[in-house]
Length: 94
Image (cartoon, rainbow, N blue to C red; front, side, top):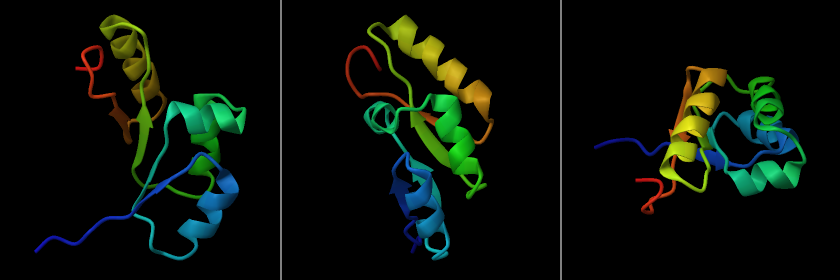
């Protein structure tokens, strides 16, 4: 039987700091909407997460075309080799 893993879904460093302090968080996930709401760039959000958490992080790549999604996914992944890049499961993302 596998053990469930808990990923916190946020881009807010205060929430991350508090949740990580519990010892229950296995990973952090976020998306473009949460990043936009934070008013920060992907890089700034990543740096904020890394202040409190050194484990796996999932960021979502975005774009209007498949080529744009691929380019953004490469850009996001280049920021940190431990990032998992999520894509929307639609025709453009797939």
